[in-house]
Amino acid sequence: VQLVESGGGQVQPGGSLRLSCAVSGFSFVTNDMNWIRQAPGKRPEWVSHINTGGTTYYADSVKGRFTISRDNTKSTLFLQMNSLQPGDTALYYCASARLGLGSYDNWGQGTQVTVAS
Image (cartoon, rainbow, N blue to C red; front, side):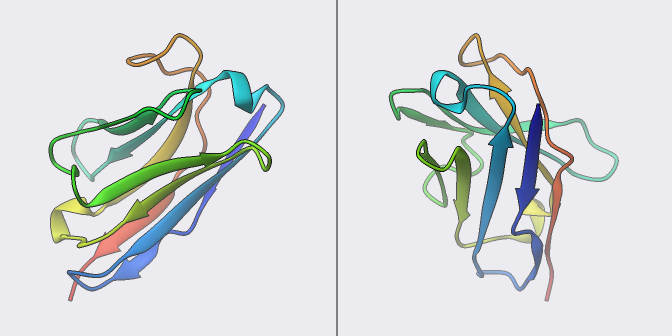
């Protein structure tokens, strides 16, 4: 099982980034997926969830700015992040959710997002 995040980096406030999570070793199409982030010194924070049917859910802190999507043909999860703020600075992880919203199974190693001027 492997989940590999990419696309992180440093961006100025108001900027955008698109994160990707390439999945292998399990059935991507039959698993819901999550994005979770962890800022330094803080607990992990759930960011977004997408189910196998494409229904999406967002934390209030990112609603209207972030968009989760999936490409089942490429076993890849995405997170489009717009209007980034310094408070979005964190290590971003993707995780599978075999049991649906609120579940977390396999995790990637994370990709760092830093928002600073």
